[in-house]
Image (tube, rainbow, N blue to C red; front, side, top):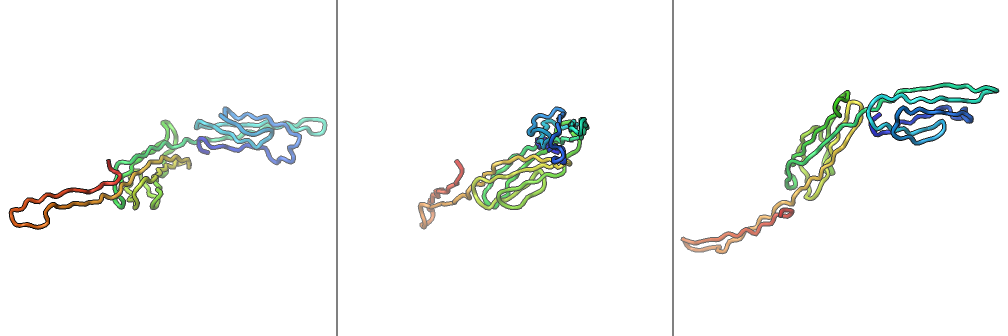
Length: 194
């Protein structure tokens, strides 16, 4: 299981447990939701190995039968991700996105895969990618890292794609005899630019 996920603990079969009393030891769980013989949703915040157990007591004839059951829960660490936008461009021109991923120091295992997905286009594998968005505006790019144990983390960045500049020039003199002095005026606009 991954850090931050819930493990479900319960005693079965429940129809035979009608008058049973269950006493749980969740082995340092951070949060527990449930009652009686279960089911319980148990959350462990820190990675590690935990040993929850339950003592089941059931009246039988004129006696009480007691049994202890224990198990092992392994909580794997979440990857740590960071993503950033290294360049901004116009529609159709690739932008550069960069990311990093790792497991917390001292954690066993490693990163199994890294990939990006966007609101335009297809997922792309890798830490450094250069997608070309087709429309101007703000786009979301999501970077995902998946550990060997299947745990994942996502970082999201806002990618601004600028409107293409509108180039407009005019000239104060359209014809004349040499020597002619011409002045060109730039009326270009750069939408999205200050």
